[in-house]
Image: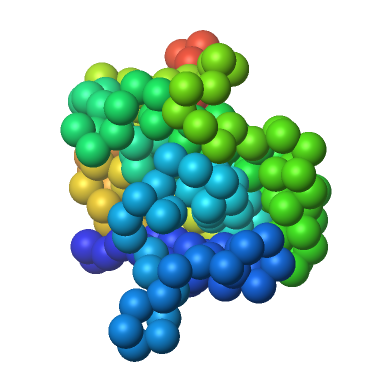
Length: 217
């Protein structure tokens, strides 16, 4: 089915980031309704922006794993053809990707969001985050989603034993159960994948091609 399983989590994490920042770092501007303003210069290309990006990326890492969090950080900055979002300057994009990576690092270190907020706060205090697009530090990781994603599937949820159970197709934006994915592989819909019997259970696997970015997380 067509679905966007990430928007609600992203908005939830953004609000948590703003609330924490307002209560523990410095007060943020509020509108006539008393709610924190979450758009405009007050929250863009500055310490608020950096904190938000790092925290949201950390939350995604906690929920879906580092690889999936990285993909969606990239997709938030670029479309599927690797074109930079027109709303971002190169400096802003570099800043966002840098801070996303910091967030993923701390997301792997804790399961709790309250602890994650504190870790991101500490990173901000230490100067680990980029808070100005003119910062000379450059993000050196993967900067764009590949022009063609030969293997567009990423794992969303795992069983208690660590087996992938739910998948997401980045191109078609659909969620697939393991059984649905297997059926589509056998129907020839996903040629970059095959099905193997692992510990007595049929399991989708990525065909080897030497490209780590194409592997199922």
